[in-house]
Length: 325
Image (cartoon, rainbow, N blue to C red; front, side, top):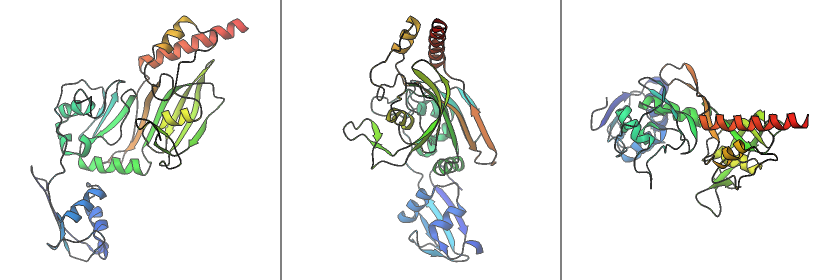
């Protein structure tokens, strides 16, 4: 059971877990807790075997008693704020939201309040007992779209596992500079930029990262694409598309100066010049429900600024085609 101040649980090793490593047996008996959290409790002596502290690799035997008596992890100390959320779906385990561009996910230097975490603490106060207030994946401040938040330990553990095993499906839509003739895949490791530590880059020492992209609509000098992630590195789509010389429209870090196509209309000039965030939207999310195992999927429509940008690009293309005809 979990009390207000401590987590206390007790289990007896069944036949199928006899002669297994302690950390493996604990993970099987307590799937609502992450493996890293269980290992930490074993090392600190908060998770014991027959009242004795052990190492994660130590073997357990039939009828051994595992006892957990642990302090909950230090959680968020941020304040709840009444900030409106666009809730797509919610139940006792999950909260799926459509995040607007401009909303910071986590409080940090320069953003101590007014963040998604502050809003979550008001909407679902139980998340203050979860790591990172239940947030298992992030969207950049200026990326819009769908996000899932855990509301229970079971959900948090399951969602982290689905992300790590790449079974959670995430699709994005973006408007990029330049024209593509078809889709493709970028398989290039991402790490900190060697000179600008605020940016990421494709570097040999980076972590593996794979982005699949396919064409939705082509314009005169831009392309509307759909991207699917196999990994979840910081700024992954932004870095990968810039790496192949097709940065996202409006990206303040990776796109460079605005490039206007030939015959640019006044409307398109205004749209491109006034688009001050990366044209990136998390369109679709697919996952297995942590409690029921049901495969669930949600989609969110493109926000108004990207819709207006696409409309201006479409008008410009059609006008040039009619002129050439």
